[in-house]
Length: 128
Image (tube, rainbow, N blue to C red; front, side, top):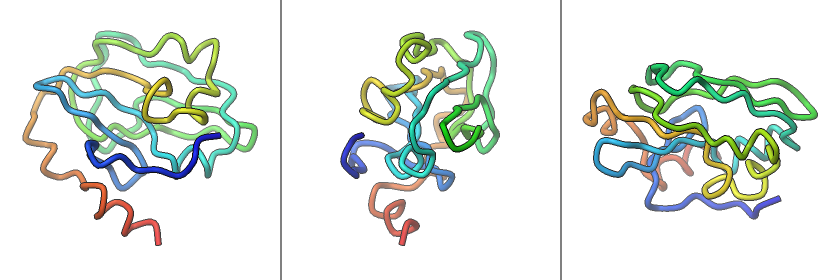
């Protein structure tokens, strides 16, 4: 399992999801805190490419040895890629939540939504 970390180049949703924005495309995943709370992830159910996601709403589920949990979209848009490798290796979500454990890439419908997300320090402050 990865060591606790919260990269400064990401934006964070209070429901423990992150977004890395590159132009009008964002990569989403869950934070170290979320994967740690879940425990060992054993299944990832990717959303369909072409489906839309809405900020603050569930767009998929992850299953761990403890529970099935909704994953909340930090931003709105259209899914343009899902991390197919997680089908075979869902434990990448635990081992590398900000790298190999990314979940989807989304073409953003409103880039300005990013202003509602937290920076690293503000997110970390919510954890204590």
